[in-house]
Amino acid sequence: MNATDFGILHLLEAHNEKLEGLKELDGMKYLNQMEQDFYVDLLSKFRRTSQELREFVPNVYNASQPINKLPVEILTTTFNMVQDSLVRAFPPSRDGLETYGLNRWLMVTLVCQHWRHASLSTASLWSNIIMGPDLHDYEGLQQCKRGLCIIADLRHRFIGTSISRSMILKAAMLLFQANLHRMRSIVIRSSAKSFESAIHLGADLLQILCTGQLPTLKTLSLCLPSGTYDEDDEDVNFYPLPPIANGHLPQIRRLSLGGTSTLAGNISSRLTHFSLYDQDHRNRPTINQCLDFLEAKSHL
Image 1 (tube, one colour):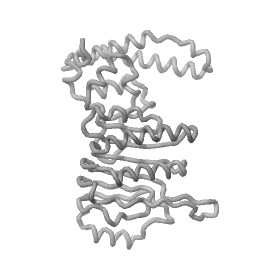
Image 2 (cartoon, rainbow, N blue to C red; image 1 turned 180 degrees about the horizontal axis):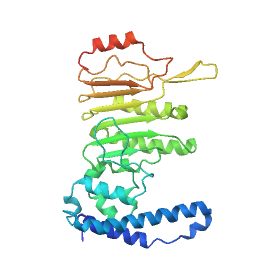
Image 3 (cartoon, rainbow, N blue to C red; image 1 turned 45 degrees about the horizontal axis):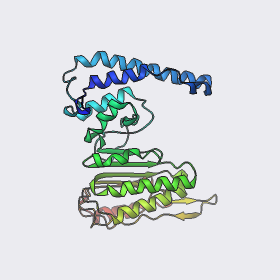
Image 4 (cartoon, rainbow, N blue to C red; image 1 turned 180 degrees about the vertical axis):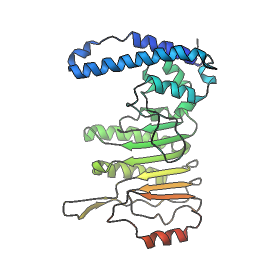
């Protein structure tokens, strides 16, 4: 049977067999009692959910259809129901700036052979890539080539040594840059708690955005720390946002900027929505500046 011939029931049966084959592993002896109880409960939950789904699915219309003939939402929902809901983020999600309430699930390619084949043969699953919350979770971006138009959400906390971070950044940046021309929505958020790292990452990403070609990009949301202050409330580091040029964003319609004090005076005339949020009170634009900006940008 080919990977695309599998139906939802086939996948659930494979998932159940995988779960039933999992016993208390030797590694459990290295965990304390609380950790052991947690993983035993989690495994029981997966088994129970999988069994309930196997009993429910045969009565559902189109349940036996090959996976590549089903709406992607059905496969997404199935993945979501049988996986840990706190591990990874992987939609599909709605277009736009909202990034909350997304389906969170384990990397589908790590479940078992049947699910791996099904997920890799369904290109629409790879249209929306969420990277985060830690930058080393960028495996999903490697599958960008499987999708058509991409929504990329990059949310970062930096952990580990500077060496490992540098290697991770380089790999992720190359993947990100290689797929720019197919992205329709980009969300980049860097934690202000790791200001130095956020500065370097922000500079690299914005350099890519300002020099690369993004012919399909319609939504851009940037949230980068605009500055940091010492104990005496003095500005010790300031990070200005580069201008958003007209030329290489021909389809841009929505722009959202967080953590910066600029009003982006040279924004595209094609823009229909513009928002500023999380402004530091010491650098926040005045009401008069905002009103002048709106008067000059009547197309917004």
